[in-house]
Image (cartoon, rainbow, N blue to C red; front, side, top):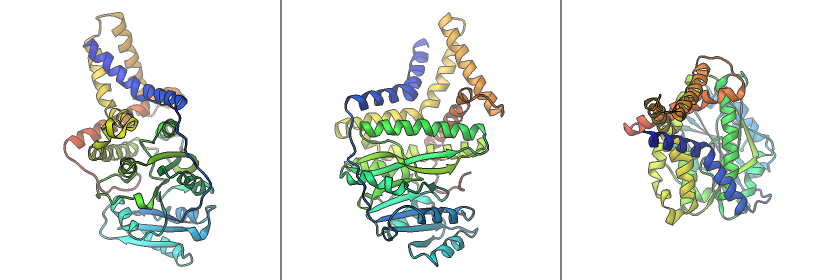
Length: 377
């Protein structure tokens, strides 16, 4: 039992600290450069939207105001069976702006199908993906295009910055987690390719776009398919995008469950990338960053149960149990809504993430899939 406990704790330490540290070491020893340069290719910016009338107008106008040559930018909005006035809001803008086009997907079929529909209409050399509530910094599109000056780069992702406007624990936890992920993406870029991206500000060469199944997660499957084809996926911190974080625990749990469930299906679909003889270092990155990360709740549960079984059998096991108990006590206080100083609120959000990942794993093993959902709920 002691071996099981030590192994599980070691795996958890590796997932959250060991892997980033190894990436930092590799980046320092043998960094891979990106030959970025200021370029302005023709861009098709795609937005899939379902019942986003409250924010779609602001999002489209934000893209029209970007510091990018107007004649080189087109915006295609796909309304996925919207019923709340989303179509009318986009059509009103398109009536006076030829760069904006509205497509309608009926019946509703989900984001991935919407992007596939829009792909048939693109005229750009590079396709950019934005969420319906994503607001770009004025120079973000220019920054996002710079890595494509390097022919080895096939996909680029920007820097997601969440705004926790209500000061909630969930919002603050999401913001802190995103800072951690952004730092890791920077290290992964220096090692080779980024493993995970954010669909709010991504870009792919148009000739590398792969039409996906409706149940596949575009901001995971598509960059992995780019790696399969021998190109790099890189992180561009200067390409900033802003979104409001979710503030309610239930909403964040549902969103994280959905993302993890679709990710599990993607990991199975792209299992070929685990072959190190074909994909080298990236196989280790994918296994460490995604496979082990999504298995973390399993390690947590086994570590706690094995530690309980060892209680009273030695000072070491008693200390470890006390530490685990303190960790879960802080998490429990967070779930009860008690405000704690930022470092002490970390256990709450980590447990929320891993509870969602565990729920997704159970649903994946049961054969469940998710194609459509209500935005940000």
